[in-house]
Image (cartoon, rainbow, N blue to C red):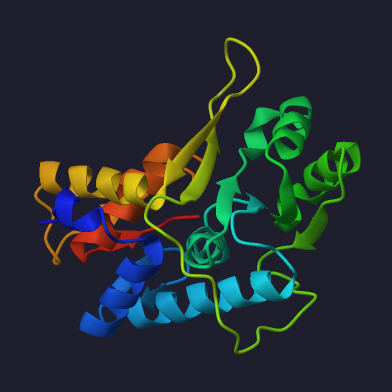
Length: 233
């Protein structure tokens, strides 16, 4: 089982790379609708490629990458790949409504927003309403304006911010909550330890990756325990 003390010195990137080295062919995520799956080696390669493309776009470490999409392989790769490269990832809730989405896209200071086909109108409206320039990239798969290049990626620190997640805003405007690499991995380890997860177990991602349950309970827990996740769309 995962040890939070050991994980305190690690990052999302280092845990992904360790898993890819130690059990490259073991499934990390399975998508039941399509029968597709992604091994530990494949998700690490995808995360590195995503980080390289974000770097090629001109994003600096610590800048924020936004995603407006349902659960999918692409969404997962953007979620992990942003953190892999030292960027902050934030996945927006498409059910929040246009006004709230306009607010959080502006408040989050995203440099780029990846939007799936189903939510292009929402995304374009939010970008138009934003007080700064935001690059909108159609998603599934991303229509990258640049190619990944073999370049040195920023190496994140365990205390660097990895995730920006917003509260529901039921009592006012949504509040942004920041999580470091160490915080996310500790949350995953707590879940893995509480449920006594082993490499043979699988988590079922029943909530969106815009929700902390989807992010920590059903992605970070398998990440730190070496197990896998089933992710319906």
